Structure formats: structure tokens, C-alpha cells
Image (cartoon, rainbow, N blue to C red):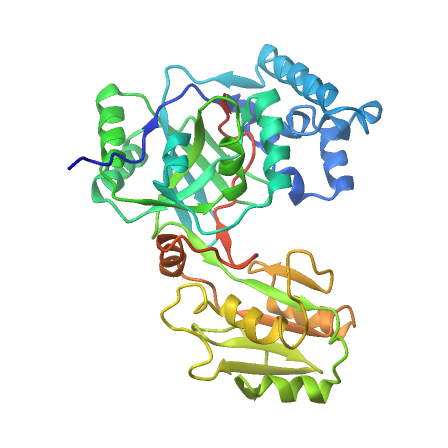
Length: 404
């Protein structure tokens, strides 16, 4: 009999923004902006981490060039950031406590490095398939720039010892980073450098029976493609700290169906109830639908799905397996241009407006997948349908950077 140690974490010498430049350096990931927005930010802010993600934004001569030239420019920009002390090296090595506060809630976790071997050996459980092309692109960026600037979010069952040390540092120590971002969120970081505290944290994580990827499947898969085994940037938050929001759906047309036939086919698998106002589902196995200027509540009929299968029981699976696929002929939502997705931060009224304006013909609203459902899928090595969850926190890039 042998002991399975997991996960293997360690402190690191992070690159962090200079104290007076914190709000200027950090940024949303590049994909969060339109090209025009990203160009404007890069042109107006020479300290933005966007210059270390895509230097083509402010240098038109790099556009369309080979990747090697782009990576070379990123490394030149990084050297300039270090020379000008836009980014500074945290010394001594630390494990960090990270807290993000929104208007309605606060989330706190441990920011550290994790051995990629834990992922390769299946000790860090996943619940999503990844796209090979995205993995390769990110792996190339990591290999040539060495900038691991956007952490993987990993969750674990609550642990009172880890919670206690987090609370102690938050209550009794000064932040090394503390600023408000443009979306009014507050970001605070404490550095744990005391050797006895570091040993305590490392051993506490070693005792964990299992941990789960909450968000960042492509980032961790990309790390696994690097030529040499490495440690990757990770934020650990227990299951009570992470927040899971829904991903709603909008469909552009009914295909060959008439509105009457569409409703008739829905009744084969669902109980339909007309509702007087917008439907934001309040429990599992309720699906909202806005169609023909009318809101409906859809409840799946008993027996249409396997209640013992953690993937089939998901509302996103029920929607896909009994409406989007068989009725609307949307078999692959990853590639079908007739469907789009709307994260739970987007108000339901916005979905209704898009249907009323004729951009889409029908909208579906869902109850968020629960953390327990995510864990159940991961435990059976299953994969959730695409765009099943919008998980928060979403991390700012350049806040704490691991230089590989």
C-alpha cells in the first residue's frame, strides 16, 4: 500500500506590477476585447500587459509576420518592463493569498505553482474536452515567451486548516497589491514568505484526496505540451468560494420548422407553461424559453434522460439532446453558426431584446450547473457539453506572473 501525494505545490518568485502601476498593468485577457478596444488600450497605455500578449496591436509592421518575430518583440517588451520596473520580481519566493471583491461577493484563494505531473497522472481531475488548435497556439506562446500570466482555477473540498491560515494573513498582514480595476472589482494580494507557514500550506495541499479544474482546461493542457515538465500558475479556491453562472443560448432560426411545429415537437419531451414575465430558472430541470414574444417554462418529462448519468442529467445536456440536436438540427454547438452563447452576467432582458429585434428567433435560459455536478462529471472522467459553465473569478492577466 502506498500514499498518493497530491497536489504538489511550491512557492515562486512572481513578477508583479510596481505598486504605483497596478491598475495600469493588469488587463482582461485579449479575447475579452474587440480588436479596436485592444488597440486603443495599447496605444494609450504603455504599461498594459497587452504589450506582452500581442505586440501587433501597436506595431502594424508585425501584423501577418512569422510567430518568431512576434515572440521576439514580446521578449523585448518584457525586458523593457523589467528595466523600467513596470514589473518587479517578488523576493523571497512566496505563495500568495488572492482576494477579489465584487459588488455582491468576495472570493479568496491560494495562488501558487503546481507540478504539471499531477495533471498528467490524473490527480487533477478535468470535466471538459479541449481544442487541439487552441492548445498548440498557447503552448507556442508559453514556450517562446515563458510568460505564464493567467492561472488555472482549481477547486477542492473546504479545508479548515487552509481557511484558517488564509484568514490569519488577511487579518494581520499588509497587502503587496491592492487596487480597483475599471469594472470596480477590488483585487488584493498577500505574500506568504515565512518558511514554517509555507511548509504548512504545502503539506496541507499534499493531504488533499482530490482536486478539480474549475476553469482553465486549455491553459493546463497547453502546459502539458511544453518540451520540459514544469510547474504552472494555479489559484486554489475551495468549492464554497467559486461561483458558477449559467451559459444561456440564442438560436438564429428554426431551420425548416414552422413555429407551430416547433412548439408541437417540444411537447413530446417537455411540459410547456406560458409565463407572464422573463424566466430565469430557479432550480435544476427548469428551462426558460422566449419565443414568438412569449416566455415559457419547459420542464423535462420523467424518464427522458438517465438520472444516474452525471452528464446526461445536466440541463445543458437535456437542452442539447432533446431540443437543439433533434429538433433544431444543431448537432455541434462548437461549430454551428446558428447558435450563440450568453454568459450569466448578461441580463435575461438582453436576450429577450435580441429576439424581439429579429437577430435571433428563440432564447433559452438555464439554471447554473452546480459545483457538485461538475465534480460528479470529473469523477467519472466525463466531459460536459461546450459552454456549460461560466465560472468566476475570471482572472486579470499580469496580476501575478510566473516566469517559466
